[in-house]
Image (spheres, rainbow, N blue to C red):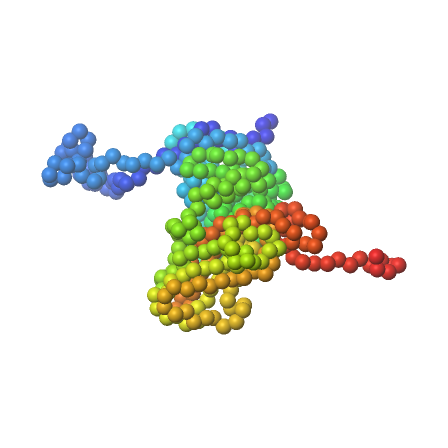
Length: 431
């Protein structure tokens, strides 16, 4: 017997965009459309001036997936990463049999439970209890099997007081909790989970990740799409990288994520480069430049761990501002927030006069190990956020002597470096 759970061969999905879909809700609509088509020229409709109408123009087409092929074995836990629009969700919809491919094929060997969108597979008029039994029946489970899991599903979803309420009255968080509980507990052989878990609170997300880990340990197959690279690293031994609808990497998760992050870094627009594609705020104060300085005041591109650095933020303010809160956050290459610096930790928020200015955050001993980091900067006051730049700067930290001895902890064991000391005692005294 083959050990293949999912076999995908040359899978492609094409969507037409820019043309309104024509609906025929009644027989009259269908007949009227037929009559109108008699006046089309060569199958195209025209306006009064003889030019083709907008509705008659040829549709634009995009390939959400292009010739994707891979195999997934039973019991594998696979992450799917890539930018928005890379084709991840389209792929999972095809594997969940929600949509059909334009060409190619996908063979699924096992019972599939999927959680792709809020409410997928739920009937809004039915209660939570009724939807649990409905989903179980769709999965091919017997009533006695569903009853055995019922209390466990309700406890996990934390909706005990609403189990007999129509799900159309649920909040999005309740919807997700119940949907995941159903998908994970009704014993599917293949569990497919999309980014929808991001809707839940942090505690529930951790709960879901723990449950997916347990499902994987039971030997079931898990497909996981998320932008939380730390979760992918923790849960998935292997991953696949999609880029513009094509599969560009397939292998160990660390190697795939490194490929993904290097591609993001090479195409990222930063304030440091003079171009920012992504920023938010009302603009009463706007950052104009960001750079790093060493202990001597020289600009540097690659600081060393253990060294003193200044993070200088230049800005322009269109008016006098009071109680300005400046803040910055450093993210690791895996997308983990490593540390956050805020003027609130150092005293009163400063007054900023109209015009150009500069604010400097000093880190006396950089506690970061070797790696690439992303700098997020923001400024706000009592009226709200004035400027927020998610990718203000990308920089690499070089290995240096942080500790008194030449020791560098393994990258997989450390997010930050901390000064510490050891003392060993034994029955005979201090060693």
